[in-house]
Image (cartoon, rainbow, N blue to C red):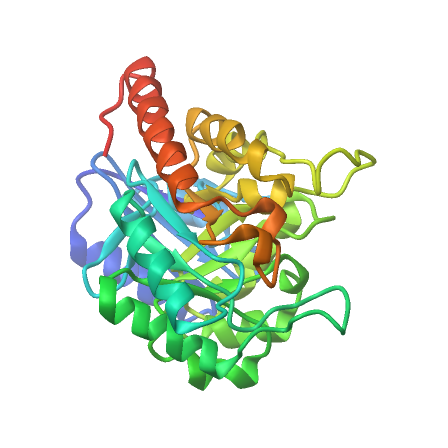
Length: 343
């Protein structure tokens, strides 16, 4: 349920209404805009009389929300959410573009620091790197685990870049104390027990869409985290499985404007996992920027032919620099076309 409060309503009256609603064992989410205040009511709202609420002198209108996702719903939160990352509060969303880059997996101190320096020089705002690696084959490289996180932290100390890395098990959370953004991979998008635990943290969560999941299911997974109190979520479109075999997955760029319509959460795109082919990353990154993505997450390796994981889709540092420059040009053009200010 959404309650739209009149513009001239007094704050004490709004607080009285909130206390009354919460006394019914319901949760509230308040979004204060320039022209109206919206109260989102979460829970079994059938116990609330919409006609009674509509009759209050501070209430403009009352609307029922049919979608099962509530906290993630733009109706509850009309303004774009801006997620702040790291000590320097790097912003993502509402025109603030995230350029996240780094290797699929952390392999050595020399490798991760070399890549971190290169991508920062090219304009990256965050460093990605896998410490725990979910692999299809049990015989493939599974990552350096805790040692990998330590190497990421060393790269962070060297460059100042916030770090993004994937979690696979809630039991590993203590290892992620100094990680800036916790990534939930496509295979874990519906690991609901993990999502519940992440809801108890306040760290930004990069939530990737599953390879066979709908947009609605992605938003419901975000809802699991938000229901625990953590609203710092960045959604990620990384391609879905179709009958096409020319690319690793099929990049669903239509998900970007659809998600922006349905939710206030920022949306980034992963063209590396979507295509699986390094030469396709640049055009897909440019297309993602053109369609309004709030950021990109791109795999970069200093020696792709010898990478222990996903070398075929990894860019060399100089290729990433070229992509970053092209994306900046596209974003300026898109902002001008839409009458917006680029940030």
